[in-house]
Image: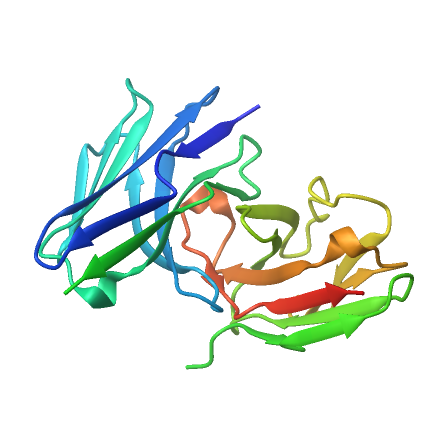
Length: 112
Length: 116
């Protein structure tokens, strides 16, 4: 069955640095991958979607890469700010295309 | 515009009771999803509705769980004879179309269910 792993449960960095979060998956070749942000007590909020034929996608200070050979996605936040502190989730469609499979998330803390 | 809304925001119930959780998706969204998020766990898919198609119920953990979507809009998730392991945050999401068209999902704030 598909498996998705986000390597770090927690990541602490200083303001201004670049945060890099990792998402690995196995037993599957998804057509795309999504990243969401979740704040405590709230539902996830969509950030970016990257397709299998796209190597890189950018949105403001966010950058996502998708390496289908390594079966890995990297999520970067440049010039990080304390307001970026949250849990970041990667998600893949299941093989039936009826739901997203989510990783457990990486909790990012940016200190000023 | 209005986002996805869920009610109640919190529900405390006694073991063995039935509960109903409600989701109002974004108007015009044909796809609706229910997920469950337990403490320290990732989001777990429960059920998916797309238009008038038969729902994908493959994620429902037991026959105590059921869901329906009336008129292609509002959805209700029902848990019968609740157990303590049902305690979790139940999240509803909607999207313009199904996943096959790469749609982002819009999540509601969730219902926190506590079974005593």
